[in-house]
Image 1: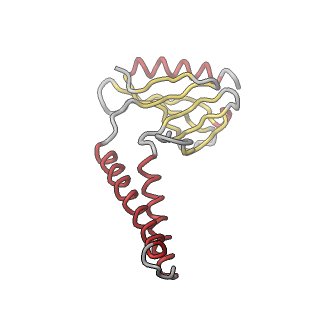
Image 2: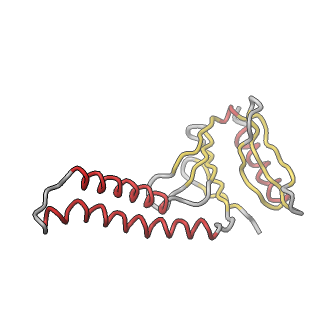
Image 3: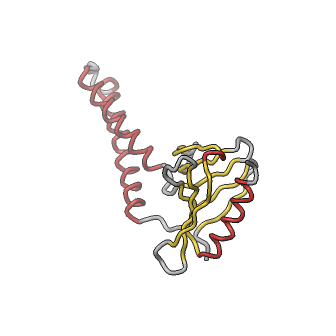
Amino acid sequence: MASFEIVRMDWGYALRPLMKVQKRILVGQALSYIIGVCLAVVALGTFLVPILFLDGALTSLRIGAAGISGAVAAYLLWFASRGTQSEVQIDFETETIRAVVPHRGGAPTLLGAYPFSAFSALLRRPAGVAGLSDLALQAKDGGSALWLARAETAEIAALQSRLERDLFARL
């Protein structure tokens, strides 16, 4: 059973993990959504209710409270809508490798973009679990490696040969 999938795109392909998302992350995102919506309602209420119904003045304290509530609501709603797992995108048009977190709606968050020439080799090593291996790209400058996938050793070997052909044959 594969723990990643290769998704073909117009510009190349993406390596997406198929690992289960931890429940605490999903619970945190659900709570962030609920609290974010509540704070957005509070911000609108703090700003609009005195003006519309009470014929009260809009004081700097109310503006500040509405602004802070709105900012916290925006942050919580952003967290609730973001993705839970990162993926690696291999782009042949721009010859870059991107690490991104896809969101449920909107543009993904870019974690890093690297040219093909920034990497010197593919590293395959045992994952610590019987029968599983990790695959990573080693940077030319000896810096940290970019983790790509964890799967059964046979699947990692096939992915490694494909990436060697796609990435290093172009250099």
